[in-house]
Length: 174
Image (tube, rainbow, N blue to C red; front, side):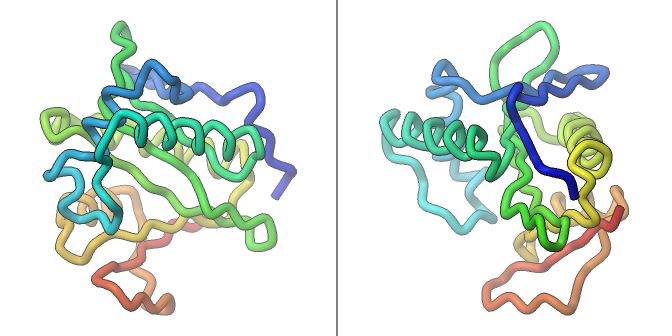
């Protein structure tokens, strides 16, 4: 795996989507996304309680990107800069050329193929540009939509990684 450098930020584009850097102007959407009960249903994280917490999250993400610790894309539809979701590569291990993938989408944008399109672009970026050997996804055992998406993209359940929670682990090898 080569040295990772997310500067300049690696904007990605698909047929319908633009994956861009998260910005302070996304604070309202980040707050709404990360406090939405439906989005949080299968997440093991605290619900955001304020716009200030959303701003802190954005600041943390930007700092991690500038330190090349992770990369987080705001998912937007072409022609509309409004954030509809997010997707990231994080827990990047240079030693094993591996990264974890995470994603979330507002419920009213689910079922439209948006995450499929975003996931395809990020997987390609991870293997082609970052030279990853594998991408790992942790998802709740009852999150059937996420599991179906991962399987459709050739992720295979990894029984070798033990999780103490209700998560299952899927892995995609490059």
